[in-house]
Length: 304
Image 1: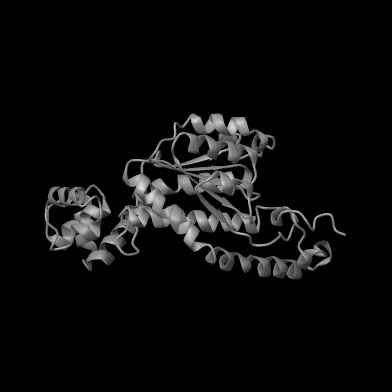
Image 2: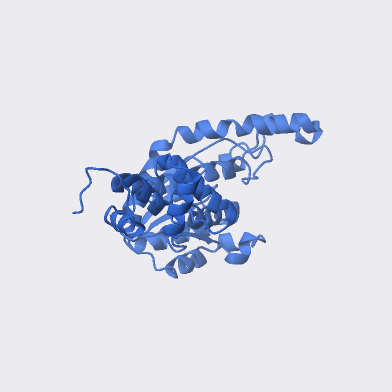
């Protein structure tokens, strides 16, 4: 009997790829692609669990809290990736979404293999962030039992933060440690135990959902437009022009004029154009509307 048969799914052996080293390149890629196709459907079955984390994050961030990801290895890198992409996409403060990885900053670029086994280190590194009641801490672990991650979420929960976890095994150990567990089992990997594959894809999709849906609910978008983009290079400035044109139906020239007056803040420019206001008036209206363009451009919206 295969000794890997009874292991957790993320460690199990995939019958579809047992002859992996004997396949042609195209056959190998086909097996990988077939397996990858399972991932979104598996994520779809757990959307209500993901939604619960989004709702908690919206509440927490609205009250000045943070969204903190804590993971080791691939999971940790994906958390850091999601966190660092929030400021350019949504103009968030870099402290609002935080990625914590076992082994620290160097672990992003070079595997620090022993770091994930140290639960006490996970506790210490989480405590250094001083998590509080408005923070939402999401533990990321494919296996669902990584000691550093378990230590980190335990510390966060003791400190009063809302805790969640994304794991890729059913009945994951970390699920009983958090209030909002997400378990997404996409089956064993094509390369046995290599959780940077399907498990990594699961976590990337879920992290995309958590951060994007949270920011949408926080008023960082207008329809599906990235109106809070930080236009700090030429490509993003051109995107801001296109966004203002699309949101308002105005000409490129009018969009450019409004953006210049609005210090390249797309939200302000949109409100200026749609409401026929100055930049100062638009800023004031946005501030009262909590930064939500849709509320600010509502004709029935009153300043109180």
